[in-house]
Length: 101
Image 1 (spheres, rainbow, N blue to C red):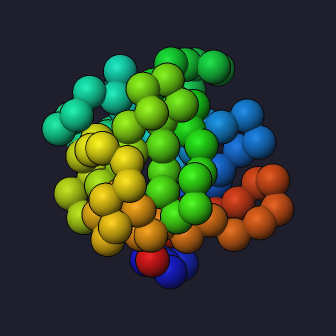
Image 2: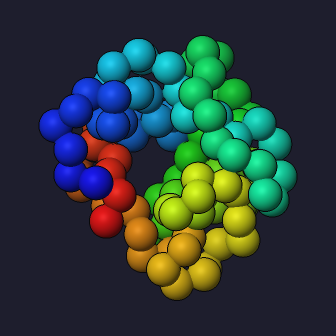
Image 3: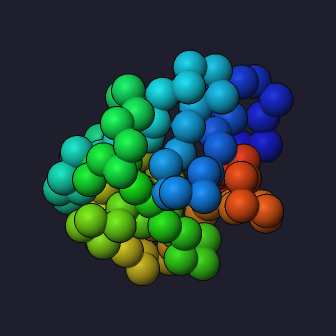
């Protein structure tokens, strides 16, 4: 969502971490197992469950190549239009604010 509420604003860092503006914590998906919820956790630097890539309008965990479901915030297969594909907005430049489409 295009929110000004800091609890709903995230920054995509150039190293692949996604930081919460309000807490400074990282978006984490542990091992990216299908059906598991994403959550916030302390940033650990190059953490296997904290490094993300943007592929089109999908948010993909680099280590598992699974994506975040934009409706339920669960890890799901990538490429499902309207669920994991085409639901996230990633403005440029290298430090971006991540939002829901």
